[in-house]
Length: 181
Image (cartoon, rainbow, N blue to C red; front, side):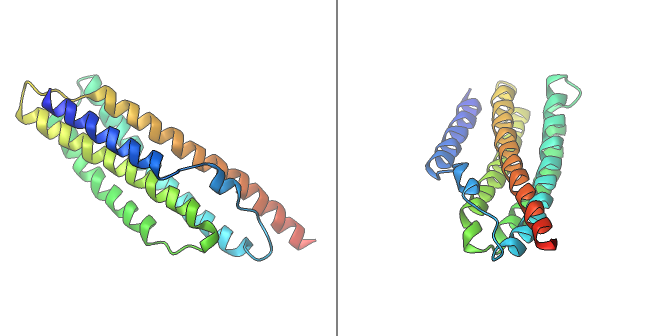
């Protein structure tokens, strides 16, 4: 029970941080394609697509492993081992996203991406902590439902980010076609 409370508390704190950070979808909607910004928007979009692809791979690995816990195809200790490897990839992704130097116009959008990638990383850390605690204490079971709900919320936010940039990418393509004319 103690581990479950700690897990819920971790998610509550993380959720409050995200809410207070003001992750509004309007920040990306305010970016407009102009002749002055088209080059760095294209460059950022390429980086963003790479980051989204990497994040999807990490979250897919997490989701498949969590499914394995539900179906008893994966034990808590196997889950912890898988998460340790996944955390290495996630840590690299977090470092790459945070290291990217962006134009001030993209600051808020990039800050939202940093929050999303760190939220995903925290999910993995919380999952491995829960798996390790339940492996050493039989009375302490993993709260798989809380992990699943956080995963779903992250995927919703990731899909929203990807969709907003898809709209911007269409504007970029249209602007590029206008330049050719």
